[in-house]
Length: 425
Ligand SMILES: *Cc1c(COP(=O)(O)O)cnc(C)c1O
Image 1 (cartoon, helix red, strand yellow):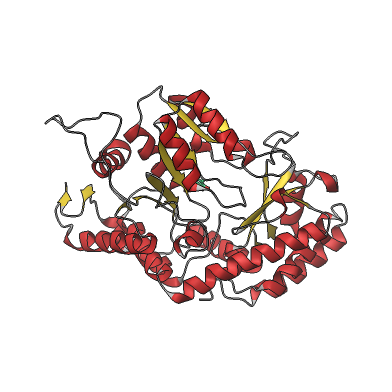
Image 2 (cartoon, rainbow, N blue to C red):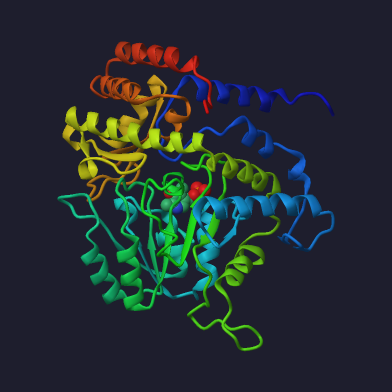
């Protein structure tokens, strides 16, 4: 069987071409380094390693133990964490492990509203988190697009959740973790920060540090962190589970032990050691000064892009950004998110439609679009290029019926992007 499976590999070649020649503005995507790709595609995929390093249920784990330990040590150094589990297959699995580990079915959780930029796994009724737990939500203010922490406090007082969740998929402002911890303490809740989106910027000190205040922190590894598709759980400090889960000897269990067993055997089987190796490589890269330069540029690029959209009359929620993304309300341009997404893709510009706070459209149509600069910055684009990107996006959106203009933009995009490597530094 050494004949090449052309059906699949031709499609992979097509996808590579798509990634290389298009303008990738989806805020949750990025391009990994050749080293991360190599580790993810390695023979480690052959290995079963249920359990943790030195505590496995399979033989032959000596090498993968060292790899997983490297990933853990590197990520602890990167975020200043005292404990980490690098096995969650994705962000959703990291959150599932945390909730199934610390909560009982029927417990109350309080998260950031999905329609204001939150994530499905923070209590949405279509997700396990909304089916298994009683969820309630806080959101942003309609006038400012920013979270009002007094209102979060009032909702927490009223709902008395056991878990308060912060973090989002489409919120462009920083979070006040210190205030949220004070609120969690008042009502006896645990505080979970899901930093899936801005984790790379947090790691390099460009945003507030959640590890200092939040009991538990989860993140994906494939967004701004620029690693393989995956998840992870961390704690700044370990602590005894306050909700009374005791060991057989009658002592309160440490949260690290609860979370480790919530990942395996609680919610997953064998860890993906090839992906864990790729995570270790990505964490190694993220520890470098080159990566610091990268995230600084990501943030600068996002600010330039958001300001330019504001100047062109687009409704940027909260009028700007502190991180790598922005949420744009298209109602002032008489467009829906669906129209924007479907038209921009014709010019090989990829964005995603997104609900905006207080949206009047359904989630399938939406009034907004979300854009991020993590991927285009990896490709080497700088502030001036952001002005060009806004020009291209605006040209398409102002001419959605004009195939000629859209084709011109596509040619310009393909010309500019095809010459750039997928990964610069
Ligand atoms: C992306 C994201 C997730 C989920 O990550 P997956 O890897 O797609 O499961 C969870 N939480 C937030 C806030 C996210 O943005």
